[in-house]
Image (cartoon, rainbow, N blue to C red; front, top):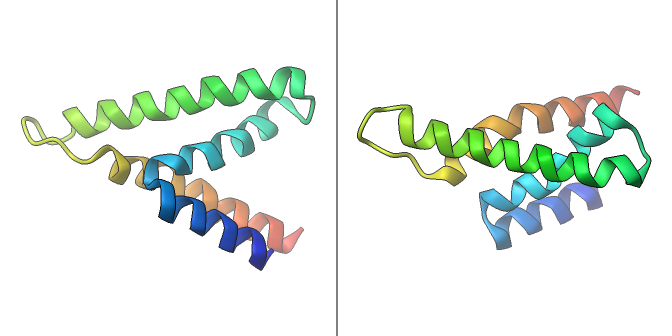
Length: 92
């Protein structure tokens, strides 16, 4: 599990916070539609797009005329789910 966390951390470090969506969307999709790739791949695309659209909407409209960085909002939206996954995997 430590190697997986190190790999995920490296991917986010190199690609930025927006690449974190690529790590979270398949995990969310797997919980919603199961393991079959026939359904998981399109679900991951839709979930990733929805996360990015939600983050963009929040980043541009949260504080009026002041726009937040999208990467900051993506991290704030997806980090609670990542922490949830970390603890669920540990106690299962």
